[in-house]
Length: 437
Image 1 (tube, rainbow, N blue to C red):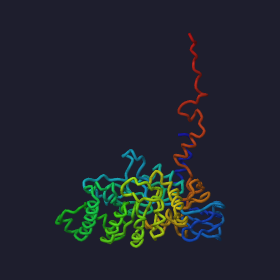
Image 2: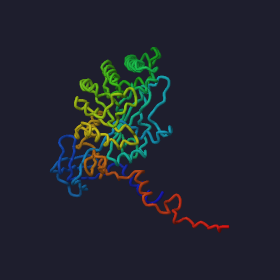
Image 3: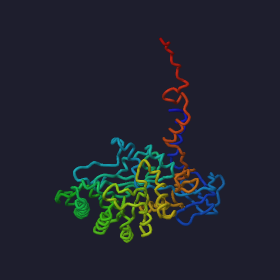
């Protein structure tokens, strides 16, 4: 590794250290607080990793580091609600992926908690955070019930320092691709999901008899049944991956039947049942740039899905839906604006709304005193694709805008014979001319 790469890597490691006792003032920018109207010529004052003041007339203490944001936009760090960051390195190499538990034959893995598999040194983290995404849900997938997700900030030298909240939500799938888990039928999927939820409730009422071996066999293991108790008690939402409108209605019926909180993931045809989702107070996590009917469950997909849901009163979070391209969540939000969602609602869909959906709005999602200082300074409109990121602060500490990709770019931008894998044409020895016969 060259000296330049070593220096960049050291900078990246420095960025993952705990927040130092430092006062930072971001001054002069348009501050999109998400807690109220934008503040022109505003100041965000940060101390010891947290926001201590936001406003137009905030006094900057002597000795504070000042970031000049005049002519720029200041926002909370963006939040992607559906990734496998820290759990997936190379999708095609199973050994590098830890987001799925292949569990036969019941395909119920409610006790599977992705926390212990998180890799804080994942190369996906730097390339995501330097694009202004500071927080993500990292989630499991696969099977009928795939396990529990976490919310992480994209900084930290270990899991504990990056973890915002563990066991945030339980994940299940009633999508077409999961029908094989339950006999190849939608009715089979819902039958099995109902059976597992019912058995989890029965287990809670008969723990002693179950532990003595004096109870009938249940539809899942003891660990899985225990893991479902927060869902049944309403303390943890069940995220159901589902797309067809009729399947969303089935999900709402199951939620009502068991008295549980649900979040719709995917929701390609959610716009068709927007009023029903709003009445049930069920949030939806959507991907905007998706309107090709690639499956029979998404024939009604359309770009203005998020806008229709929002107009009906549904809380919407936008995701890029792609772990390695989670940085594109701003592009998704920008295209939601192009298709009817207001600019303010689009910003909320990648900041405050996900923080509220996942129960971390007391720490993240808006620029308010007391919250963690995850702040991004943009060179212009943050939802414009080509707007540069000027500064990224996570827990009040500025992150060097360096990733493996930028290091490779810099390495190959100006090649010389020291860094070339093969010598340049000028450095190659002159071929020996063979005299013609």
